[in-house]
Image (cartoon, rainbow, N blue to C red):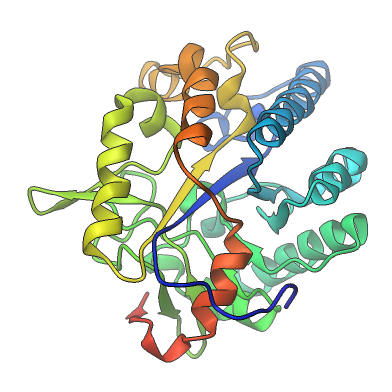
Length: 302
């Protein structure tokens, strides 16, 4: 693993991550037919917004983790290389952004291998991390844990410990843990949550970042720092969430609200976020955690 070193002193670790896909690939638009012209527009805007994020991070001196759809390494290789060359971590976000539910274990293994290979060939660096589209490693797809371990993924960030109509394992640990599938295990970095009234409130990013006032995310990160160990706050965003002028997809009303709520304010909120907190790449946190692997909690996904 790259950059193995002496573990950092105990303390909170906040990870800023971005799931890089074109806007038309989102799960809410799975049934939407887009023309080649529309897809080209979204691809161009994806690159533009990703480069805006790179500039914003560079100005703040922040390194992040980018989980990138493997096909983007084929269509936008320079963008992927520029992300890696800027010192950010590149992880896999699948090959073409299909949820795990749509694969057999054999098909999923092929998808992850191809994505990993395309990204590694493009950057010249190994890929250690994975995030499933729509956090789609759930109880029904627990076999995916075994597949990820078998194809050489070191850590995953796909299990969201919340209740949601599309994803989530609400009783999963809120802090890093060793996730067991059927026969194998992998280190899991769950997105950040805020424990309130006996439930886990999602505060890690995405629509929650755009919908809730900033104080909610801050409360969640503060709680993780004070009451959990190891204290790791994994945050996630998408380049399209910082593009208020993009053509809107023809979604049903609830999906449209979820997708576009608060998008006009998101860039300013991200700028404030990177000024308020110090962030580390996921792989650097993983190196520290695996140096003390036996102290991590274990959780059976299936």
